[in-house]
Image (cartoon, rainbow over the protein chains, first blue to last red):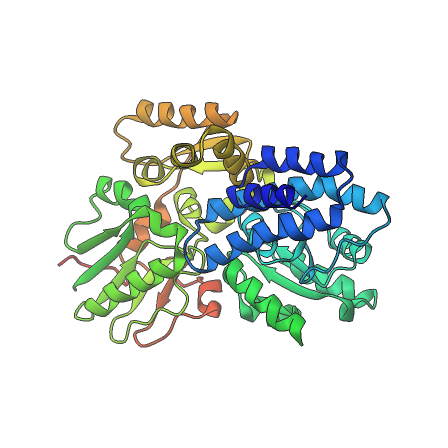
Length: 215
Length: 231
């Protein structure tokens, strides 16, 4: 059994979706505890790559491939966990991510998602062109700690303000931390619209999340 | 009047083609700085510091992921375009860029400078392929560029061999399965700025003033005759 977990761990480190997929299927077929497979396999692997990134030993594509491989494994194992009525175990936190309405830029958002995954967070990536309401629906559904909204244009930045306003209007502002980011955004902008956090880079966003959630 | 120009390779062909670089000291920086705004910021600050014996420092950089934020030129004023990036600068204004964006946000724009000196998405793919193999490289590139649907070439003055650029862009578009198109550029803003004119949509920063977000968000100046006479 531990061999299977080691396989999952290594496949995540290698960013190899195929092996993650095969090994996850073996977990299911052999009736191995899927929570253990996630905690002792997938997560152990992503921890290694997260540390390597921090130490400057892994490159951005490495982290992104590992995060993708992890996603494939979770895609197979999570339904099993739900079927068995088990809990997936603790993550550092849950973050709902997306690019705001009218904006399709997703490079920065995807990198941020990979970095949060590598840092041990559970990431729910909604994709691009996301309405304020849809961020909030997902955040409520999964019990998110953070909503992260990306905007790459001065014209679409307003979507970040709409998200904060939507939360206020629905008396939900205290339930989630709101992070904003993207090229034209800044700390000044984040303060102006009443967001909880802004970061220049994905790494800084992860650090900020750690500080804010620890409070 | 002594003028120093700090430019990006993205605008070099246009500046040369117009003969705008006559009578000033020009320094063009590597295109790939655009992916590292922190390093671009440091590099520009370094050159500004070394250029404090000029009368005006002109930059062909736009906001470029806020690389310009926090720059300080103690004794020499700065002048640069108020566009978001070089796409807006080649299209002529932030307004036109945004209008085109709202019509179709799935366009990847190419300019001659980008095709000559930049790291195109296809070159990026080949780098990944060499390192990670085809399957992973395709996956990575899809994560990064999967949202785009069309490649559009911005036609600007001074393109000596347009067919070569068309072919290069077509090759990229074919790889990604994008449609291709062309659009007429407008370098009047670039020309004005390089001539030292405080045109609308340019930003003029007095000596000793740190570039703040408010300054970057401004950029509407009255026209005046603050043009450089060559040096």
